[in-house]
Length: 123
Image 1 (cartoon, rainbow, N blue to C red):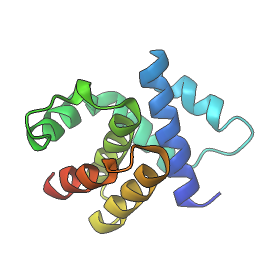
Image 2 (tube, rainbow, N blue to C red; image 1 turned 60 degrees about the horizontal axis):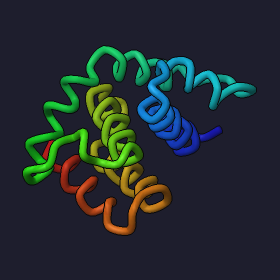
Image 3 (tube, rainbow, N blue to C red; image 1 turned 45 degrees about the vertical axis):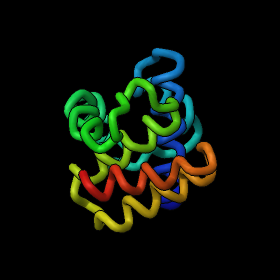
Image 4 (tube, one colour; image 1 turned 90 degrees about the vertical axis):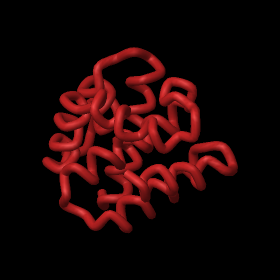
């Protein structure tokens, strides 16, 4: 499994965690059930569990008078994973934003990728 596929599964796991109010570790284990989980994914999960509130505080000023809670769960998931990746510092910011935009184009409303791009670019 390549990094894009792992990132996509992690976003889906975060989405399910938000939607179903389940722990992130449980949803990650469910989504990666028969596959080895890369240590990078575990690092992001740990970061998300520890710093989710901080990421939301960093995101909200860039939402143009919206609150994070008003965003669709998938949009929230994409932004949270991208913020964790930015904090992890392993990948280039442009790569992380591009991946987030591509995932948004697949899973989100038609124009969601635009504000996801903007929020991440200004974060």
